[in-house]
Amino acid sequence: MATLKQIENILKELLQPELFSDYCPNGLQVEGKSDINRLITGVTACQALIDQAVEKKADAILVHHGYFWKGEDPCLTGIKRKRIATLLENNISLLAYHLPLDAHPDLGNNACVGNLLAKAMSFEKIVPGDVSQLVWQARLKNPVTSKQFRQHLADALGHQSLSCVLHIAGGEGAGAIQNLAWCTGAAQGYIDQAVDMGVDAYISGEVSEQTVHIARERGVHYFAAGHHATERYGVQALGKHLAKTLSIEHEFIDIDNPV
Ligand SMILES: [Zn+2]
Image 1 (cartoon, helix red, strand yellow):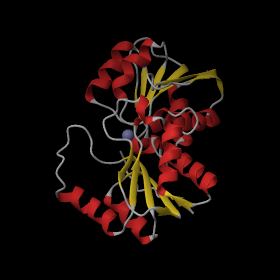
Image 2 (spheres, rainbow, N blue to C red; image 1 turned 180 degrees about the vertical axis):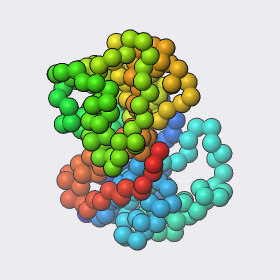
Image 3 (cartoon, rainbow, N blue to C red; image 1 turned 90 degrees about the horizontal axis):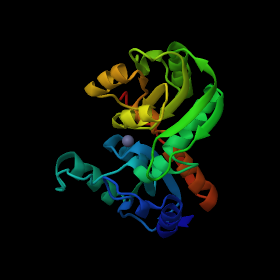
């Protein structure tokens, strides 16, 4: 058993949200009961996740994608009303950590994806990102073809099918892959930054129309491996850490999302 306050304090100390200029508030977003026995983690605080948490009699939910994003309509109407009403009716707290959970050097999404990639292909070295630089880099011991790389990536992220990883072949100058960079989620906008680091391939979760042209014209391979798929790991690692530290129950619920 732990208190909500204890969980909040541990997360605050661990993830240091004050160092980030984020698109949403990090920390406790919806307050529920003060004693926590059962914690559910998930990628996004969608209705399906909340409904399962209610069914499992959870006391708190911890996610990567919470609510109250910059620029969104702040009114509690429609699906937002329903989600928050379900949380409040069931006295379940919602804790959300966005960029601080991407950036954490051990438990973050980028660190976790780095560990998975390192298991699938051997790394000669890894250069972690930090608060100001979310893009991580690594060098493979041996160069691989883009086809081999795509397969390794699909294996690392547990994709059922190779088609889950979209490959945009770089144009002239893009050959075998030895130096790579990655940033989880919708970080396709960092492709130029990655190319400036001198990598052969850049991996993120999503893709935009312009990403294709940048990849082709700057001669770098681009892989979109899934926003959800690349951001499944940080919150699980964080949940495990809390469960171990506080002796509470923890379960990660994967609400399938093909994007
Ligand atoms: Zn995300």
